[in-house]
Amino acid sequence: MIYDTLDEALTDMQTLGTWDPDRLISHYGITYHYTNGLPDNIKGNSIPLTRTFFINENVASPVFVKCHEFYHCLLDDSIEPLIDTSMVSNSKIEARANNGAYYIMLKDYINITGIEPSDFDLTRFVKFYNLDSKHLLFVRNIVENALGIKINKGVFSL
Picture 1 (cartoon, rainbow, N blue to C red):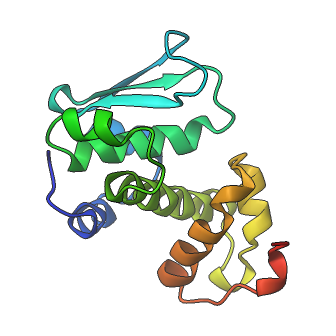
Picture 2 (picture 1 turned 180 degrees about the vertical axis):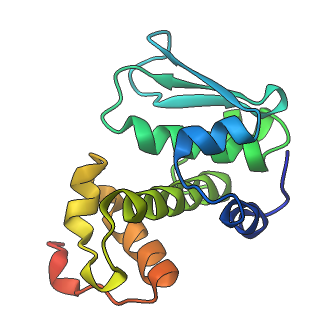
Picture 3 (picture 1 turned 135 degrees about the horizontal axis):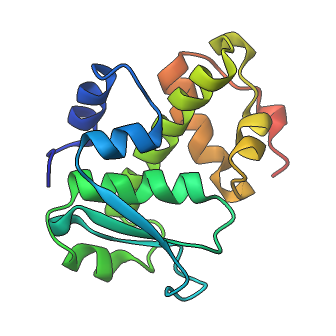
């Protein structure tokens, strides 16, 4: 474990001058590998004690998985909680890793596209990273908080 909280990790990252996931991962001395050795239903697996993670080669959104597993390496101190919660999508550990991943992706997206917060389009963001629609509400919450904007509820076809 490198940080105790997600906020602590994000605060430190803001001082680095980049939100590029590969540069962040390298900065923290974490390594990752793409593999075909994971079952299709497992998108990634991290081993925080060794600062290593694996990404299933067959995932639709490798950037999301990369950022998600990166956060496990930053915030989790052992592999046991990850094994216990890996199949529980609403666990606190998984939600924290998802929120961190969305934040990095958002900041990197803004840097890549150069858009202003007021021009942010949630559906374009989700398509850019090839995220499943199940991520929409969670991403919206991160975006609204991070950018200080409100996203039109008409975006959602729930």
